[in-house]
Image 1 (cartoon, rainbow, N blue to C red):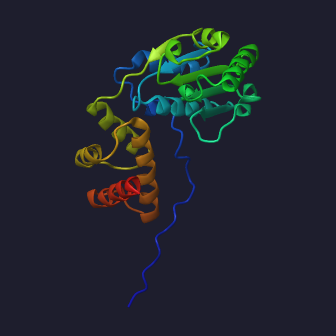
Image 2: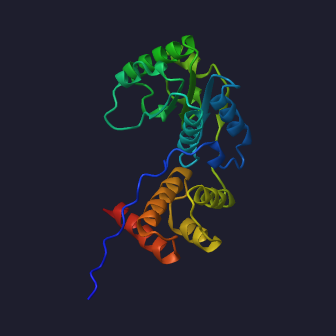
Image 3: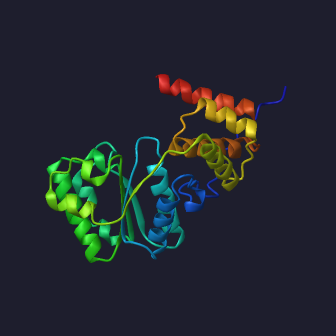
Length: 240
């Protein structure tokens, strides 16, 4: 009887995240993506504010923008402020980076220590000539910011409302994301994923990364059956 070989572990031959802005689908959001692209290459405004509801793709846009800056050899940090256990001092010295991306600002709005830290960071970044990109679920004027000076800073630059992708946009995201990772997903596979997976762009990108990892480990392209096993695993984890 042949001994079953253990699955091959994927080698770290490529960086799965973050992809550049070419991987972000701009359906209905062309103006916002164009402004972020100019922000990333240094030809646009140094400060931008992006807002949109849950599952609109804000975080994915910021991650892609961070990748775009990093591909240019510059220092960049992406910081989601809804990360548990963060304290305001995490903002200290961020102006040492060329570009700063702050996500989920709504998570700290109304907290005096956070608001003062954000105000100070904005000023330091501006004085140092750094680029700052902020994102939240609400427009800056509806965040509930109590510090007047911070309210004025957040409203000081262009603001863009990010609209959620349509089903065709989500399908294009999966198609392009799969190509970037060297994966083949048929239309049937993409439809299968969209019928069973959360549809926000960030969740779809994370799923593509997991499909990629498993494809590398198994040394074969995904199939409907392997996708079914993967999605079933995710569904069971959500129920725990």
